[in-house]
Amino acid sequence: MGWYGYLALWCAVFGSLALIGYVRSLAGMTRPQRMVRVRGRIERVREPRHGGSRRGGISVVVSYPDPATGQDVTVTNDGERGEAISLAWPGREVEVSYPRGRPHAFRLSTHLGDSGRGLCWPYFAVFLMYVGAVVAVAIERGWPWALIGFCGALAVLSAFYLPENIRDTNRRIHRLSTMTAVPGRVVAVLKDVSTDEDGHTATTLTPVVAFTTADGRAVTAHITSERPDLTRSYGHEVTVHHVPDDPAVFTLDRVAEHRSQRLDVTVNAAVLVLAAAAAVLGAVLL
Image (cartoon, rainbow, N blue to C red; front, side, top):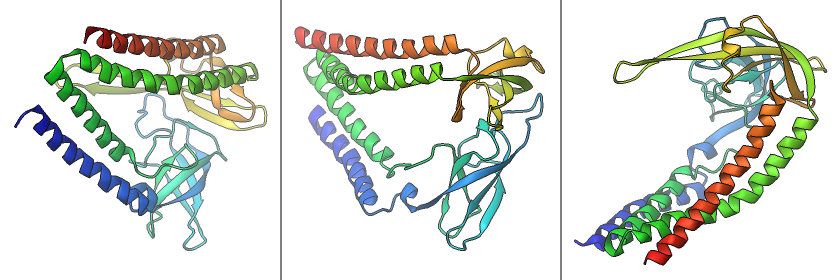
């Protein structure tokens, strides 16, 4: 069996998996489609313990309605309960999903809205089909085809993504200019120690900041950005800048955040240019 035979087998396997996934999605049978999704509300936030772990996120008490009974269900996010909540305040809405008839087998998410149709794996199967085709052609006809196949596709995707990235960045920069400054405090520094296969240990320190917005919302948040100064600032006062209507959008350093947003666009533009140049180079070398 030649390369094209292996390619046909490869595409047949992953094409079948993709087709099954698409059919299941159209029939509404994928796991995300079979879940009941309701809006929940954080009723209480427990302050993290200094020196504790950030695994599992901030401990909260959530209540949500069960459409089957019409009654409210009150739970905590202890254990593996979906997305780890790293920013919380009483009254914040979260999405609660659970299998039909099992409201206590819930999972939480701070991303409200449509969670998709369960097409992640079918899309990945199609991607593997494409990779197999490019690799087979590159082996059969020469490596420049790999440059065209991979870098050309990356350039096209980047060309579609970059304009939306620029619009999003401009919106974020505008929001930075509307932020309100309020006092905050580092209420804990969390510590997690991990060990790799070679026995080397790594320690991750996560500061936790608490602040109150101008309209009285008491916010507790993990600071996951690189701020080594905060890891030694337990109990210190800080200044928090947040968007007035959404405390989830906040920063401790507006200048650095502004610079980061601009850098994001620059990096994506560079990826587009380099990918297009590599694809052109592959075409020239044929």
